[in-house]
Image (cartoon, rainbow, N blue to C red; front, side, top):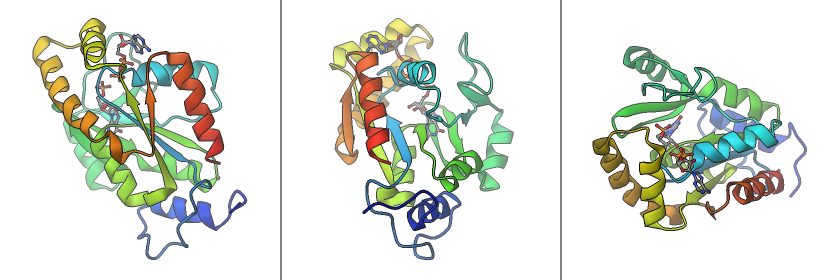
Length: 216
Ligand code: ADP
Ligand code: 5GP
């Protein structure tokens, strides 16, 4: 079923992004007409690398910038990788309903600002979120089949450990914590609509772009 941009399907998606009850919104959009893609996967699998490559080679794809209470890593720029906020500001945003979804991950809070996503969807334009499993589940609950959930998988467990350790951005206890969460996340891969194995960043980007494009 083809629905033109700005048609009922997009109104439904945008209404859900606004937090409106799906019951009160227009009829749910058929798969294939929606424009919200979620990229998830265990810490260290390469999500940020893929997102950075997408930004570089496909600047037309809009990627949501999350807020986080985590401290910036070397090279991370406020407003590019994340908006870095303190706990108080994060809690204020969550309480004010300014976050589409949020979750606590390995000791820090992360959330998607609602308004920019809502604006994109209202314009009938695609949006990409890079978020954790808990966030992806919230999006699935809120948007049902109006969101495409993509899981990024490591080629092997050993390679995941190698990447997370090799990145050198977290102390051993944080790596341990992230690996514990990673086991749970890998076990939930079946909840996602698509799985991509991150062997080659370029290949993952190509496939992701195809998924986003075919989803229009
Ligand atoms: P995430 O955002 O999922 O936590 P990162 O993007 O920070 O993961 O990647 C973790 C580490 O793995 C980084 O050092 C990155 O350079 C490396 N990496 C990412 N993708 C690949 C790949 N396809 N092959 C080899 N190394 C990779
Ligand atoms: P990192 O600290 O490595 O940048 O991110 C840790 C985890 O938080 C990753 O799984 C990442 O996908 C997730 N994350 C980043 N932004 C958000 C967000 O806005 N919401 C949720 N739920 N998770 C996020």
